[in-house]
Length: 377
Image (cartoon, rainbow, N blue to C red; front, side, top):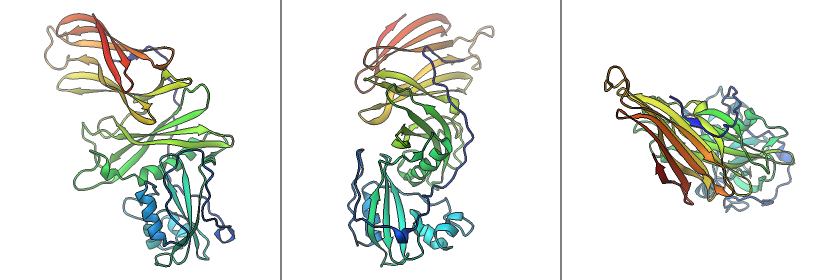
């Protein structure tokens, strides 16, 4: 059984991924000129309520409460053999476990702490004083949202290093249906990269799958996150991140080929949709389904609810003379239009409950989601 799309699927580039903890490059902090604040920001940015000379722990609490994130600890905390412990925490496991946001220290009392927001901004907070003490305080910070986060040409491996701290620092306990009662140990997988079909700019989308370790039942589906990078003058910048945006797959995994990107509309530039496709069996039935997400009012949301696109009950014992009583497929066509989200036509054909049938169903976007407006047999 195959669902057929009437429009061209964007070609995907498959690469092997490696998980790496993101660390900003080490810098000579002792020679830095510290500023109380540096703001040169054209994009949106979360509130920064910290002030110079305040205790660092108070500043960290303010940032986290405002939505800023930082790299989370490994599942069981840092250990003496971790490179970060040796290179950035003076060989002290306790320092790395207390400050997972630590990205560099000079050895002369100056340290740099790194935070991230979901708009793609990176906030570097400079501290002075002994770590693990109340004397540690803020002496400056800078926001470098206008700098490209990937220098030069697009690099999928570098994108993974940038994305991983977002996944690690997300509070997966607050994601509905993610953790069980006994544990919350997220496992993250990079699925694929996609060239976005914009006409007026170059952009890439990276998809990831996250699931609680050990969740491998038939109905266990990973949560998918999506990260959009745009090409800048000097490289590529993360401009949008959508954590745990959708829920798709089975047996704890999702096939990279199940997620594709297609042109879904036009608002002066192409609007893209993230198409989820999948199939499964149960009690002798084979079914496939499709779901589409797209950006609406600045957020990524489900625009075409789960739509069953094929069915076959040949394994259910309900056939006659070995012939299934239900056996049908679909063809889905995104119909080009002039502006806004385009109409979607679903054409079904086959046998339903022992009777041949053929029907066409038209879906139209109502400003928030696609709704069925016409069914023809």
